[in-house]
Amino acid sequence: MRLDIPLSASFVLLFSASGLLYGQNPADLTPAERDKQIIDVLRGTSSLWRDPGEIESLNLLHGASRPEHGPAGQLVFVKEDAAGATPKFEVSAENGVHWKVKLGKEAQSETAATRLLWAAGYFVDQAYYLPEIRVEGLSKLTRGKEFVKGDVVSSVRLEPVRKPQEFIGNWSWSDTPFTGMKEMNGLRIMMALINNWDLKSGNNAIYAVEGEAPHYVVSDLGASFGKTGVSVSARGRKAIWRTMLPQNSLTKWTAKKWT
Image 1 (cartoon, rainbow, N blue to C red):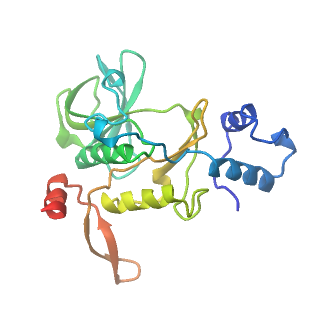
Image 2: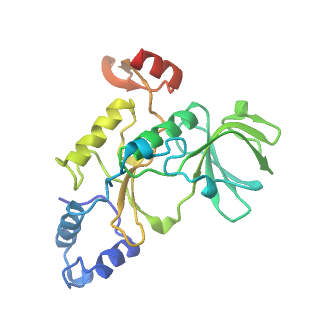
């Protein structure tokens, strides 16, 4: 099985420093041998899940996002992000940290979803939801103008921008080192629980973490808390049942799910 991910230098160094490449030089390995050894290592690690401890003692308000590490001080507009279906842009904080700002309903649903996955023991991106922020030098946006009034932007989710060397690649639900393991099955159950309908590989990331095995993360949870229904395929002109459609209404979802 070939891994559809680029192996960065930091990824190779992680395994080499940990003595997990069995004393061999990665340059002497064939691609198949290299992938096999990495898969063997990943199967023996907790890079998908960790024990969260006593769930009753966890702070679900903040989750993996510590308040002291959140956005603070003046935020300055950097650029708009045209990728994806949801309006986004990037800002920089006074301490030099860059933040990806997501607007709209996905900002709320994604933040809530990260808290639930984190409490269940899965790795997640840090996500901070704020009712509003002020952004200096905010340019006219092509998307999400309804959330902007002057330099004030409302209903936002902020996520720290990772360094390029941290990103190893994407992973697929149908082809992972964890297939058949209870941790992966649990993650599938969590996706069903929160009705995350957008399960494409591009929404899953593998991150290099210093001193640890790479973390497998569902990096985009914005389509969570959707509505079950049916849609029509324009290409095949056939009705296709979909288990989840994007509605992103936490109020409607909780009312229907638990009452």
